[in-house]
Image 1 (cartoon, protein in one colour):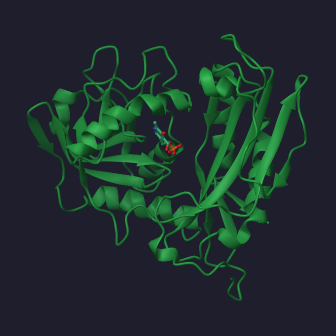
Image 2: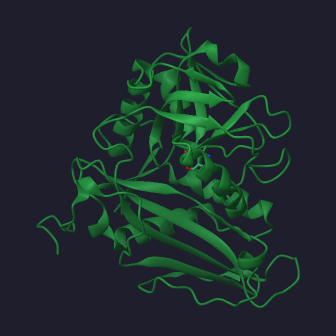
Image 3: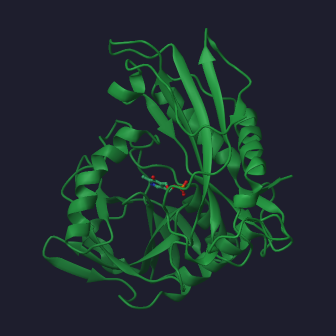
Length: 344
Ligand SMILES: Cc1ncc(COP(=O)(O)O)c(C=O)c1O
């Protein structure tokens, strides 16, 4: 059912993050050294060879991004060329043929437009999650790159991560490593996430939101917070975020760095965040597409529990960063040149 504005009638305020089958997905095949043009399809299943490299050797990668309904009813993509570039880099790391960045963004626009009715209304706090992925397919058995690939994009409406406003939560520093020092941590490949399932489960069983990963070489520096990057605000109003070849280069983090410097007047630095120097921060958070910011109340490090701003309240700098970036994504706040790409 649709309302008069061409938006489905769903309880948009109470959506979570669960699979919903929307109407169309984009599908393109790579064969004989080239990608076909790709097209939209209504079938949400894939029929692939049992020998597909994606199934056995993890030759696959993905992206995660969102479309936002603006006040005037139009649809905003947020920095989609950054996702296109990161997917190309992930493909290159796993010897998969990359999809042109321009064609990636056009395909995203096409699939969002086709599922326009599923883009949640402005003001609901919900958005349309977009999941592009590339998988190695075809008849194969040896450990080698596939000769055939599928690039697909599906979309589904998702709720705001925090209903009723941002809330801090606690995290557990994991004794597991998420990625190897010169491995695939900087690529958005499934193996990294398979490896994070057990540490994530153990953290949640102990009532923490997720696991925090330290640098795999020395286990002395913070790298990732679950599937998000870390940032901290020092007592001197510096925005600090880790720099490492084994973390995923978050687009949200880079956007927050810009906002912190240009809209909030903070000093921004990428550098080491030693786990035994948490006192330098008055506020801390995890950042990524899903939540934009998940404020970190406290961090369990061995037997020590370190509280940043508060376990109950969100710090003022975190709040300002969040409001500014969410405002940009929904079109309420002026965006830097090129950050918002309209779907029309
Ligand atoms: C491991 C990991 N780190 C960081 C991020 C945040 O990246 P982005 O801001 O581009 O969503 C993600 C994805 O959300 C992730 O999976």
